[in-house]
Image (cartoon, rainbow, N blue to C red; front, side, top):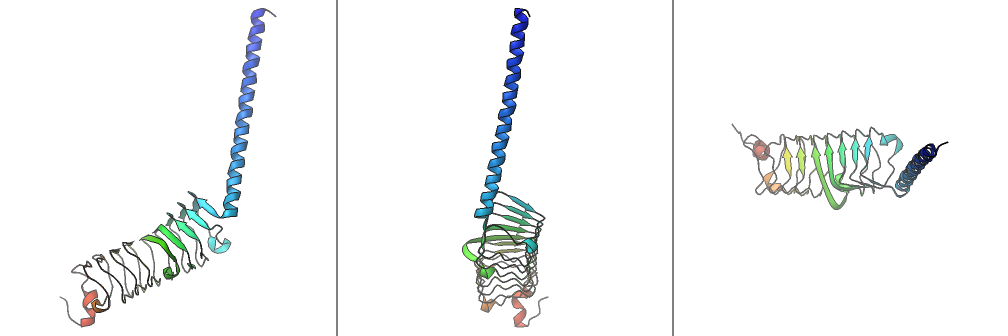
Length: 234
């Protein structure tokens, strides 16, 4: 073997060795990452804390919900119907196309939660943890739900159905009921000051039994304020 061939062989051998070493390093990195992922997953399961995770097409009504705190998580097409959500914390989460009907909300924390196109029949929001309570509802069905004494200041109900919902003694200051159906909803000793009901429909609010200073109505839905006076609006 000539000197040139010898040097070439050594160079190729070194190059092959470096490639093998790089492959070995890459495998080691993947192994470490996999270990860290599994460790984090085990930690989540043990501590019950989930952050920035998505949950899709899960039926919690059968399995129950594992976890205690959910921060910036997304739930899509999940079934919480009849679930025990007591003492759980949801913070800055989105629930979309979910069924949460008749779930137990005893001491449940709902902090900046957006509900979109959800079925939410018979929920007791009055049992929720009041600390930092903040919700938004869009295209949700909230029939027979209770907001008794709940602070809903500046809350938005957009395109929602709230038939037979209870707002007794609730704080609805600056709350917006946009294109929402309030048929049979109960308002008694409710603070509706500066609330916007211009596009709400089918409500009945007795002005003498509720605070409605500077609340906004439209000429089309004034009947909901004057029905008890048995007058005719043409």
